[in-house]
Image 1 (tube, one colour):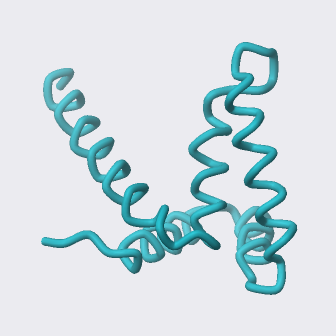
Image 2 (cartoon, rainbow, N blue to C red; image 1 turned 90 degrees about the horizontal axis):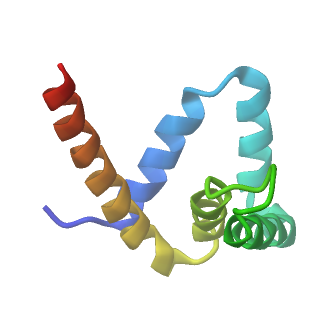
Length: 100
C-alpha cells in the first residue's frame, strides 16, 4: 500500500480531533491557509528549538512538531513524515507486545 500526502493529512486531522476543545481550536486556527507566515515562522522556531535540545525547556520534542507544522505548507514532507509515523507505531506495538 502506497503512502500518500492525504494519509498524513488524515492522521493530523484524527490527532487534532483527540485534543481538548481549546487546544483543537488553536490548532485548527493555525492550520487555516491564511495563517501561512505565522505557521511557517512557528515551525522554524520549533525546529530551531529542537536543535538546541540540550538547553532547559527546549527539547527534542520540538523538532518533529516543527516538521509536522511545516509539512502543512511543504507537501514534500508529508510522505516521509507519514512513513516515519507508521514506523514509530510499528516499533511501539512491538515493544508493547514484549512488555505485556
